[in-house]
Length: 386
Image (tube, rainbow, N blue to C red; front, top):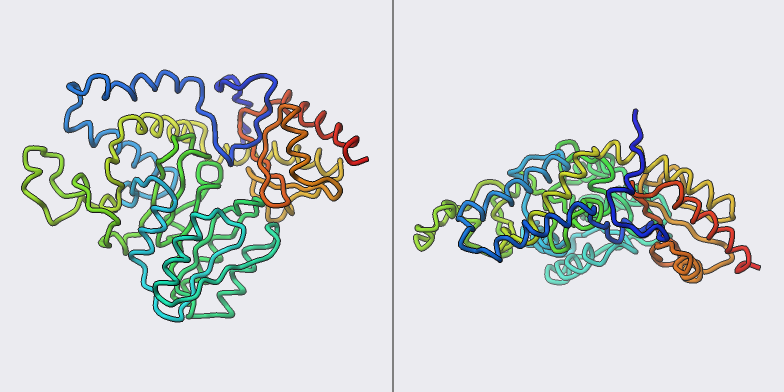
């Protein structure tokens, strides 16, 4: 199976910068600068925008996202954020007094606050699985489901833990939720586009990914997969474009009770955003051009080299048997993470600190010179440790 070569020439990255922070935000490829002209066109010349233009780009984006999700276009809603998707699911999923929502500690807050509110409103329990970020989260989730049984009505988890890069076995967890009749909500933000996942195989009730990380998309646009059993549900907002027949602008005043097919009823208002859609389409297209499986293989090889380099210098990494191929975390037994990140920043290396761990998330732009820069920065830490 082929490994993709470094793609640094496609990005406008300074040569003195080693960017290992794709989990924070991915840069647009340099070619995307030309897309800006297309994105501005609708606002520079609104008289050229036709009613059909309100639908064309968003439907292309929906279809591309569905391909990466291994889903179908009718299953995908266009949303502005993970929190919006959580609120949508919370509005539709049943939860009674005394029942349990299960989620993880040290995860991104957007997959917490909405469930916290829902549990409080329904007099239910929000069970937050705690422990070190590098723990075996799959085992922890399965043990909690077995212990609490049918009291668990919803499991809201990521595919890859935000802080540590630990990968969860979604197949095993989905089987366990089926046994107790619990719903499954997935936050795929730190995996979709870099790690293969199939909505057809896992069949979550809802799954969302923000577009600005591993999907090379713009901020304020994400993709929500909605299982067929929930597509007759109630959306957060009642926007005009989600209604049946909205393509005919002359008949918009003839209010329609029916919605557009599939998950489109859950689309955010003004989904046609002429500034965002061209970038979203290009980003999804780039991921499909490279191929998610090829991306995962290539990043796994790269991260294996980086881990070896770091462990040789005394770092402790996310355990190999549960580490995702594209995202990992390391810590040093003698030097605080913030201190390391500060020294690396001065050396032209960008990473994120999450708790006591340094999160490392390279992408295909990393080349041999970047690896050399990291090696030199690691060696320089010996003076800090001493």
